[in-house]
Length: 354
Image (cartoon, rainbow, N blue to C red; front, side, top):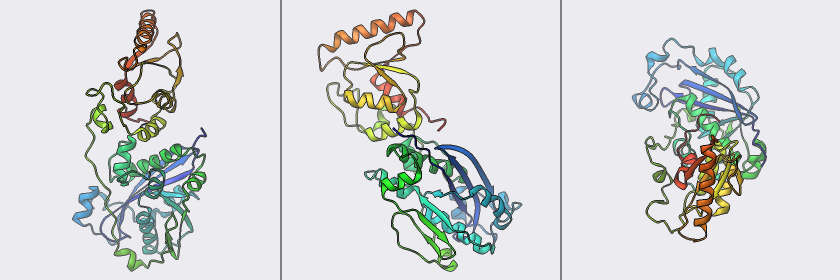
């Protein structure tokens, strides 16, 4: 599978009020060769200087927090240097690009030609069967933990959604991902902006953009689910002989995302109740593991499935467990996991790095 070596800069704005030129926070996260390489965040004094209660409730930024900060125009040289010539990426990118253009107009700064794309559009094409495409629901699905409506955290989450889509589609670059998803990159300039995915050209005046509001992201409560609850589509404990429907796509994306089995050798003994043999091996491989036929001194994990559906599995399970136990007694670092514990490595492990 090719490595998704994408290069781009993910951005997110928070605004003080309903006006598109009222930026009070901006973050930029630079991704190089598929990895987060650098980040920056600016607190901004909006011009004119007023906040609405509704916007404060969304992001928690108050007038007092930015009263002594520079205005956008004073920060533009630093911001533009952080953007460089990258393709900009945002979630609901029409809003963020609109804020950028209106801030440039407000401060009478020449508007550069920009290329950008939108992770909402990318997610809709990459995972067409999802019910919700807000940043928070997508991040929850992918296992990305972040503080929603903080510009830096939203930018990082946005970058990770794009990277997960690239991994899912086995693309080697952002351009190849767009080609696979049949998405045309958005553009912006003095004339306005045109969004990705074949959207119509829009020439929007400053007054017209000032009247548009940012769409609220769909918000889910913080997850406190158990492993079984988190999969939502199956119950390992209640139906031992059944083959369960699970969100395999989600597991495979998360496995690629967090690589919890990286460098580990894995043996499966017995039938899993939630996955076929092929899917179990595919999940372990996508999680970074190497699958073996039998337990030996190289083995890191033994995943023990059910022996109930096929009688001959009983002997093999006993044999592999006995060998793993023997090697453990000799000081070998072998873990014996149930099916639920194996799935928990992918479902429940927080992705600390990407």
